[in-house]
Image (spheres, rainbow, N blue to C red):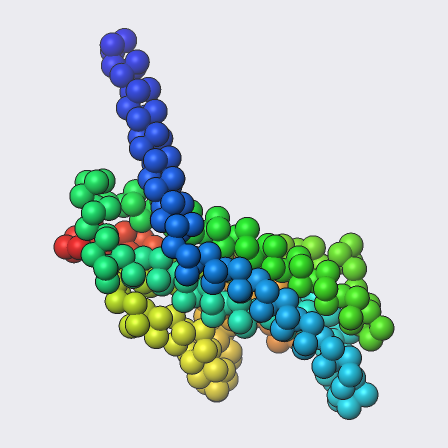
Length: 276
């Protein structure tokens, strides 16, 4: 009994060290691929440019907007600011999430990774942890920068500050949304393992399935639409809940997290069973 206790600590320390090395390896892969680094940098710049352009257009066309549109912007100026660039951000994050894992299958690099680590699930966990943290940092930088750029432009029509109710949660939550969406895309890439097919599947979720579900009649269609991953997760970026919302902001983000967790579990199970 007494002899077995000290033996467990070195094993646990060895596993922690092994996972740390895996994360370092994945971080090296991400930062050494110039296309990924440049994609993230361009993502930030273009999102901020789109924010400026759409906010300037909104202010310039304010008098031409309907009373309902003006009321919506006054009710949720934060959602208006973040939404002006979030479409570009989420599409880019989805593509990057797929490519992080699916490109390794395309090039055969995944075989080297799995040969180096016989236990396959930690490889996926390390890849997801590193990519999720990178997207979280980039997402937070982008969302806060977008807000601080967009708020002064919109101030004359719909004033808003970071201390207003729901603003900090919405801006910070935007980064969380992008990080979860990136992991969602990574999980689909790990399941399908083909870059083009995986990107098609993710874009289908983001751009095709959501509008189609919106057209379903009755309360059943409304609930199906509300529980789709991007529709639910996007609620976190709204300063205030809107009429007709089935879920609250944190509930919606939780739904996206649940979708992502389920897909990652499926991806891990398939990774253990299938050949690379």
